[in-house]
Image (cartoon, rainbow, N blue to C red):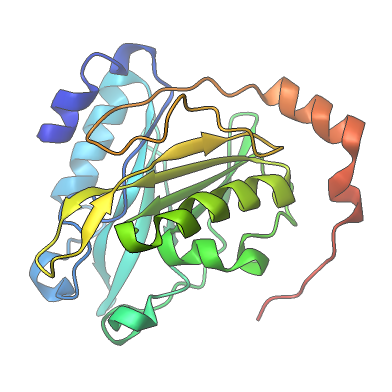
Length: 236
């Protein structure tokens, strides 16, 4: 698999591998042609990679469950544990809501000393849904975000990091799809004050690694205390 070839020289020293939205197929409005079960080929590959390299592997793919199609973020650990998050905000502009079922789960879980929040593409536009009311340390967005709205992608990633005092990872696809839409990646990682930790927003097929410091995050949160003043929301 091309992904494994790209990752090969990084895998031995990596704790977390983040892949884009629908990373095996690209975004599709024909889920019936590409959907897998939870224990399908792609999740089995993710599990094998996680076990071999003692790393978490995560990304989104199309899952068929109980007769419904989901755009599902799958998180697989090296000991075989799995978590998932189903995309809550289906992209109505493209008709995603007509093909995929909107998720209801929180997408927040613990991993070691870290609390992780998983989100998918269009979720990035909805700050209340991304609001750090559970004291997560890292929010991850996987996406197929098109070139035409690249400035929004970069601005929103930085905003989600700042307002939630959290590390923020955004991983986007590249290339051109069957509809003629172009994707230039611009994947990036931001810290709790919006500083970009990646040396350059990637606009080609590449692998970028960054070390995240939980102690530094905690010190900043304790020193600045911005999260203590956050508003509280009840989501329905």
